[in-house]
Image (cartoon, rainbow, N blue to C red; front, side, top):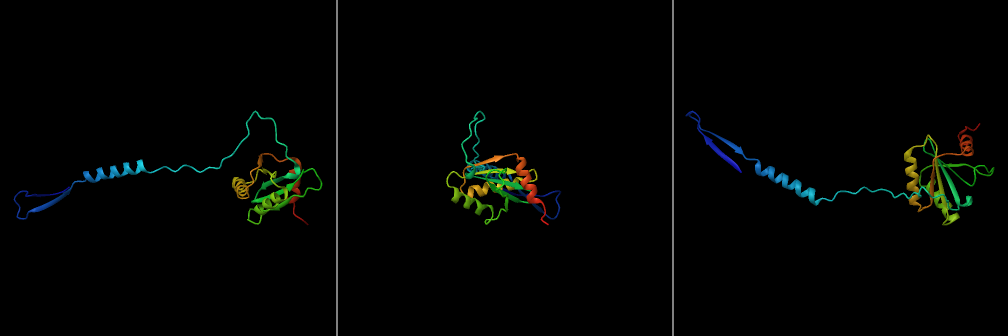
Length: 171
C-alpha cells in the first residue's frame, strides 16, 4: 500500500511531505500471474510429417513395374527433370518442369490418373539441388495424394548422361 509519511527535519519553516510506494504486493501479484499462466497454458507440440522407413533387416523389395514408376530428378536452379521407364532405353526422354501448380503438380496428377493406384515416384537429387526443393516435392506428393514414393541418394551414370545432354546449350 502507499504510505504518506510526513517528516519535519531540523525545524525548517517549510514542512516537506514525502511519498513512498510499497511495491511488495505488486511483485507478489506479478509472480502469481506468471505462475498462473505458466500452469494453464498448453505448450505447442511441433507439427512434423510422418516418414515411414523400412526396417533395416528387410531384404525383400516390393515388385514395382517400370511402367508404373515416374523418376523425378531435382537439379540446380530449382529445375525438375522427370522420365518414365529405364534410363538405358533409347526411347526414354528426359523432360523438364518447375514447381508451379501447372508444373510438377499437374504432371503428378496426370501420371497418377493414367497409371492408377500402383503409381510410384522415385525421387533423386543431384549434388547441386537445394534441400528446399526436396521439401517442395514432398509437399507436392502430399497435395496430389501420392503415398508411394522412394528417395534415392545416387544418380546412375545413364541419368547423369541424360542430364548432361539436357543441360547442354542447343546450337
